Length: 368
Image (cartoon, rainbow, N blue to C red; front, top):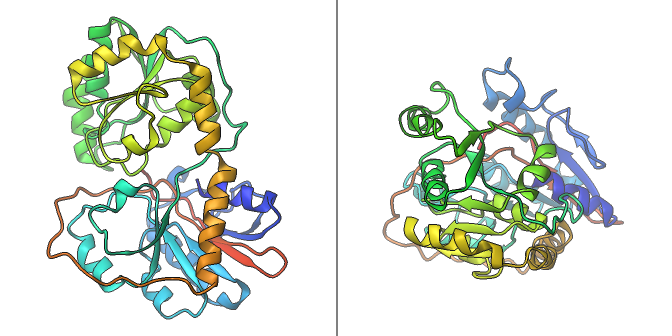
């Protein structure tokens, strides 16, 4: 997402400095703290070392920039407090983790952006500058008028993503399910590995289920575009749900559980169906053929393009530069339970159109 934002800002004429891995492909000015994406580098043992180096690259001379936009969770917070250059942080993960409460309470004055209104609910008292939904380049996915003959599941094999629920839906509907998902090894995420080994893997023996494995960006277009529908049976406070808008961009309807941001992203009965349980998911999947795939694509173009995302961020940058940042310090007494989450890549943006520089910092390395 940092890449899409960066390239769109450059396209609109802004001067952008991107802090990211050296193998990043960008039209912005690139400053790298590592040679290649840390997630794809088997030789990388300590990812944090590269992130600390990146922070030094950013903060050693912030006078170069008019505004700095962070996408690295909270690593920069102490430095931001001591920095005179305006900055803003987009939070990409779930915020209902108890460990986060004292941290955000301490840095409550820093300006933040959410990726959905639902994401804010655990910490409504943060200094929110706005919600900016993710956006994709308009030509990134191909619209396909004709529906395919299989259901799709894409993402990560983990209990909260619900591959087992997708299999149950497909079996009751009687339609083939293709699963394009990565499986974390036991050393990376023990919970996800045990879920795959004990719950999902035995279900892959069913002839209706095809496990494709992890696919790259270039393969998503065909995988999602040729699907009859995308199944999105999540069981966690989904911060956004990028797969939903990727499917919409192809014209593919989505059947999604009512969790987190789903009700903000989906238009129930138009871009798919929002459901509450297995039974309603099965009934909804059977009705998908009646939906307009063209209308799914139209709603993607209306709401979820990279150009719209960039416009929203530019409005927030301007508000911060104009000194309109409000500080709200009222704090709740407790925070609800939350599980850890991670972001696939981190970033900071710095831009400048004839005098306005925005810095985007993004060193891909934390896997989500």
